[in-house]
Image 1 (cartoon, rainbow, N blue to C red):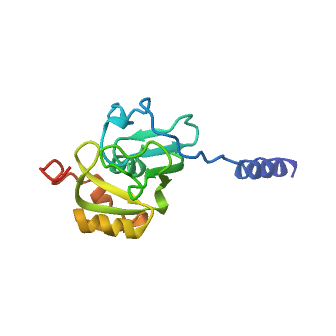
Image 2: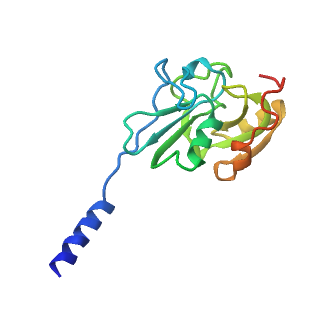
Image 3: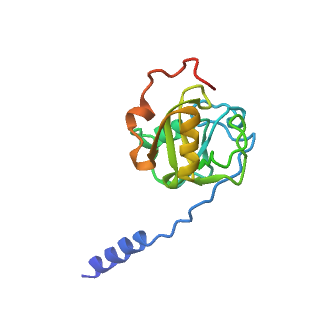
Length: 169
């Protein structure tokens, strides 16, 4: 009986472990792309930062789509604590979105997929917006389809057709 009591205390203690959720970091020249090892800030379009339990730094990606791929690929993301994306409705520039102050939680954003705009590595992008009205405005100008975080098709995130065409950058 004593063993079961001790085991229960250990299990309940592990379940009640408090994990601090980090807030978004400012984008600096020190941020290097998790996949490409390139300086993230040197690439156009929205960026993404991911925090994992047990990892002391943010994982940066030159495009939102690459970060979302990291999140769904087997063997990649392990224990995600937080994912932040640029709110492109607040960005004053596609080529150089603000380094700080416009980060939002990825799961709270509306996304435009299939637009004529290309992301940081010249591939199709998953473009985040805090406000649906801003996303709708973007679609009127650049085309695309509005989806929520949970409705982004994995085939879009992982697909590679029509990636590097001459679309509007």
